[in-house]
Image (cartoon, rainbow, N blue to C red):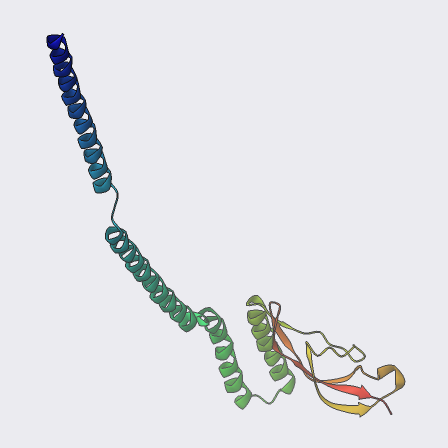
Length: 189
């Protein structure tokens, strides 16, 4: 029986040793897994440096975009009126010819017709660029979004608060007012 006990004890020791080895191997495997997981996960320093790099790249891209758009705006502003000016040069030429012709001619009617032709040419050039003259008549209601009252004069009851006279025409470019129409408004007597 002693032998059986010793045998059982030896078997238990062997089993315990094997269990300890297996347990030790499991612990080592877990440590290896944790280390590999740690090495695959970026540290906070890595994440911070990556975020800084992304920030610097984005900031640089934005600065380049801002500089490029500023340069484009300046170029656009400097050449914005180029087409309009090209359209007005022939009108200036016509005025010069009319002035030269008026020195030698005494025919007022022909001079007037020439001036009307030049004015029509100028109006057409400006109209093609979107400049429109406001159509304002005596008796229209005063609207401070389009009109500028330069004075008020006593007027008939039906013209109170309405336009009595147009001193200077107003102009719009698209929907924006370029120059307000200067008008005289009727006041109560």
